[in-house]
Amino acid sequence: MILANYIVYLVIMIKRTIEQSIRDKFFKGKAIIILGPRQVGKTTLINELLKEKEYLFLDGDDPSIRVLLDDISTQKLKQLIGNNTLVFIDEAQRINDIGITLKIITDQFKQVQLFVSGSSALEINNKTQESLTGRKFEYHLYPISWQEFEENIGYLTAAQQLENRLIYGMYPDVINNISDAHQILQQLTTSYLYKDVLSLTGIRKPEMLEKLLRALALQLGNEVSYNELSNLLGIDKITVMNYIDILEKSFIIFQLNSFSTNQRNEIKNNRKIYFYDNGMRNMIINNLNPINLRIDKGALWENFLISERKKLQAYHQQYTNNYFWRTIQKQEIDFVEERDGKISAYEFKWKSGGRNKIPKSFLEKYAANGTVIDTENFRDFIIFPK
Image (tube, rainbow, N blue to C red; front, side):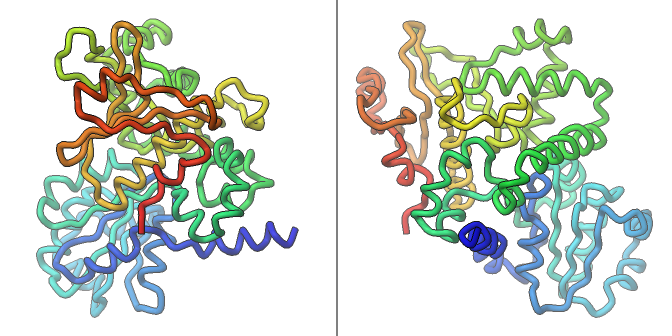
């Protein structure tokens, strides 16, 4: 029990990887925007950045604030901001014409450092992209990364929790309250997926969104066909594509396309879909069984590694193209990374020993490096070297 309390304390105090990068952007004449799903710690991070500083806080979840910022003008903002040099607008996507408000503040109030958070890339990007061109530093915040987790609780304790993280995921509240993980994940999926996403997008058939998510969760690690999903759900292909686009922009899922250079035997147009968090995926199919009772442990391991790799790439500004690879003859590679003109191939294996082989034809054709990632060496794949 003492150990459990110790872990909770450390994770609550967790330092996020992008914190220093954001600090370096203070008062550079641009808004600092942090996007990501609900409950990943956006507000906590900005509050930490502004700790012991005076700032104006405007909560987009508060109806009175939304009314206050409706039909905004420069004069109205001048009265509202007053002498504050730090302004934090939380859940900004809920505020009407938020792009105009943010543009006025960045253009007319040069002494002000503006901080903005949003739980949906879809809404906030639609409303701010044009208005804030050249006026923003944008960051994405995800559930806790393995590197953040390990740095705060230590290598040994983190290693002991690996299987739990494959099942319950990396949301801060889940990590802090493992005994209530089922209830917390249920609330996350209910409130975020089936309330926030629906209300922000105007989807008229919520039951189809639920069925689509379940279908994607059950196909984890496999190639996904829009036509097959269309037939399964009884909706047209364009609607399936639109729903998947919404789920991507809401930081719930992401896609990998197939790697191809027009070789005749390479699969060119297929895709795989992964979830940003294992726990949310498992809650969608209502399966939080331990790893030793699961038939999908390989898919969970693959999802965990790829989502963690994406966090590493985002937080350390590694500009990469990510793919999977398969041939008509069913040779395949789980993950292909293209960066700075170099190609690296990775195969994922849950247990070490009897290592899988990466197809020699791929390594030779693309002068690629090949590595098999298992529980013995996975840290090298998802932790940025010091």
